[in-house]
Length: 390
Image 1 (cartoon, rainbow, N blue to C red):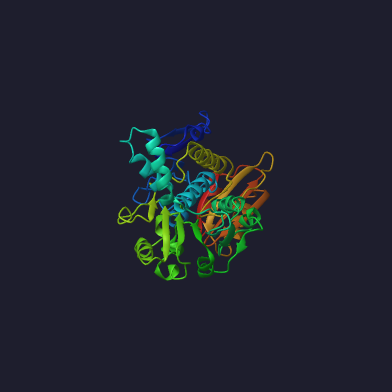
Image 2 (image 1 turned 120 degrees about the horizontal axis):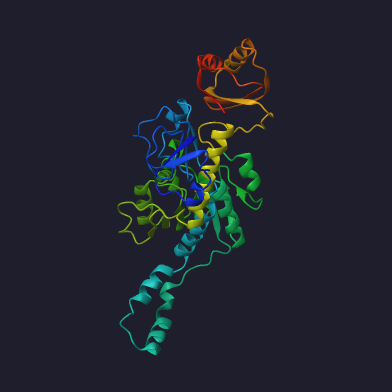
């Protein structure tokens, strides 16, 4: 029986993936095999010795000590793309709100609540509507920073609206490149993209390398009057630099999902309360994906969409027993492990090994279940972090 500890409100559709005959799921689980959460911060939480995996029902993992967990052999999953459509649609709303006089127009119409003469109201609105005139998106240029699942969907949407699309992503993966329309013009660097774009939409993860990616120096290259949209993470943008750029007329508007002190007093900022992924469909998709990734890992040792360990799937040899091993990515570890198995006369049927930065992961299918002393000997191999029989 596997134990799954949950934090936050996880969509029922995800929780239902855990069969009651094999899983115990709840918020008060002790000694969990896995944790399923959304925004709960784990940095100050004690780490149970039993913990094998953490799955974040969402894309960002800044609420999880990813590097520390990796060194403990705890695989951290996220759910890239599960909330992509929800974010994409809000980006569209942001583009329209920044371009058309929608919000001030609504506010003006609501200010006429005291009028009771329909003809007079219509005449007044006809007279005043020019105050709320805007522009069309068709023919304008959108620069997208980060061309992953969300960035690719935003690009397709913008192309469908008749916009020109520029893209910049220094770490574009092969899978992401396949998803990307060939109508997107790849930019070699951020300053070039900023200089050419009427609108700039950010879709990069929060990490040390992207902290304040948009700062005073970057904004110096922006096209005057450009609109900046941030539906990624608050740390990517330096709010002081944005406010200064707005005051200087370097930026025309800033649309974001992350309010900051000072934004409310700036009329050219449209700040939403972090609702990018707040749709029923998105929460369900994220919960289902996270649950299925946990199940696949616990029952088969497979890793998909991990942020600290390499992706690895291997067809299971019929009737075999499987050993899953996490280790430091240094030479000789796998050879030493195979030596232990050979000495114990454990026949290897199939195996696969992958590495990612400082960590490696192995799946080894053996003909017979290894004895406890064999597993103990593998655990004793230098640089082996974690071993389990799946």
